[in-house]
Length: 167
Image (cartoon, rainbow, N blue to C red; front, top):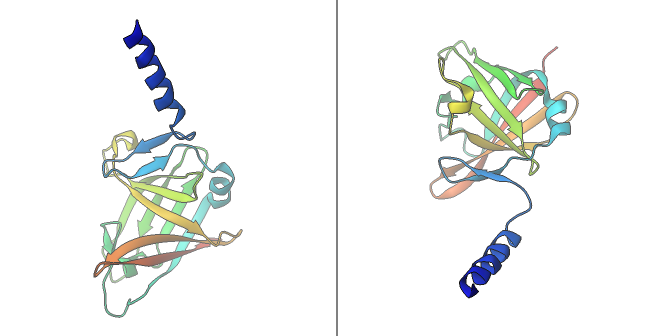
């Protein structure tokens, strides 16, 4: 009986210390909140054009964005965000780069992180276990930024993706 009471007390302490927000762990071990920032998601819904990619040292270093292509290939790409089902598409169409179109799954958690999963053809989005976490910044009716962190020579640098609403 004493062991049972002890186990109950330890369980209560363990669960009482757990964070109030639900979290999910990706395959890379990064914790992300399952609670969503619905107002920000609604503000981002629609069609967007990625107009600029900027980062310190862009003249000297090449960034492979989202493990797909050189970051400069994303300039001019079109993105569609559907907020009611957190799906959409991205299309790379720069003339000097390989064309690419893919469905995406996205959300914005309550910590302001944009969660992006690129879905391979023939794969169900629920089976995609890896993705990207980016910070949402500068959100207005007609523009916003996604900011990624990269490691350059042991230092963390920001890569900023600038979006403009498509007409």
